[in-house]
Image (cartoon, rainbow, N blue to C red):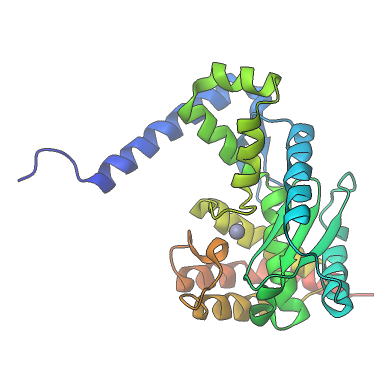
Length: 269
Ligand SMILES: [Zn+2]
């Protein structure tokens, strides 16, 4: 009989400890408590939106410098059209929205706080239809609207270096934190969001695509195609933290009635 708890159990209890500390910090730092749009979840965020937007812009510009931006009008027009329809219902008029296609055979996409969105050409084999693309772009934009990257940076910094160091780092524009934003939004490097954030992005993304006038049923087919593509060099960001394809589909189906209400209002003239 082993005397120490198994590794998985220790991880769970460590997570509980962090969760408890975050809740305590959330109570202590009322200013740091934010509410996620559309789901109403409370979250702890220690970066201002302005700081997050600046860091997002820096990460985006770096991607544009390092990758080949597509000039194919078919791809760029499609991504811009879908992006603008989602942006129109995202309730962030302060974002300077921009949509780019990266010519790279990688099933990937990202949206950064501030509204910088990129889709990689390797994604089109999965999206197939305009509504399929809307499902992925809705999901990515949802991560930005819900400030998932900033939330992760806040949690990581709290857990790793402690509150004092974080506050000093923020004051000084610490490059570690700037880099953390790029990593946290999955730019360039695979560093997935956690499972709850993925579920929340699925939920908000489904509502966004429906509000933008795309049939939310199409999201089911899209995520099924993604799931089937796993192992064929499939997309890391979209699948790695999800419990399983079936759980994802079941959750999406449970949110469909809510999404369909938005879809029907969007279609009414
Ligand atoms: Zn995601």
